[in-house]
Image (cartoon, rainbow, N blue to C red; front, side, top):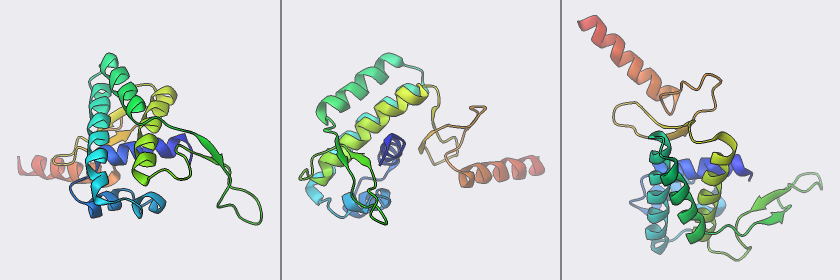
Length: 175
């Protein structure tokens, strides 16, 4: 994984339903090497990490740099990354070079927590604090990173944008 992927993990964890192990595994579907190794006792740790991620993301949405700094540093302190270079998973005899954020024997929950903390920190370093948002669609609230050129993203996905635009169109037609 690279830093952009870790930022995506942070966004998914912050936006996920963490009420059951199945819902956590669904949120981490792109990382089966973590999802399949998580257990019920890991849920309180992941909920705490997600709470910290949400506080940091909300602080970015509301332009509160002091809180962003405090929350991300608290996450990094509680779940420090322990980077190590890895080359497994390559093809045709060529290694797939990437960095893991936990030791080879670390529990999956430790790696997920460190990856989310590291990903959000690296995302702020790369993109600053103004490109992070929360979906404006009614009933959604998913966090996102706006990498568009004009920085005008208001929705987490085309699905939410279309749903809101159709609702607005229908409301105008009724009026």
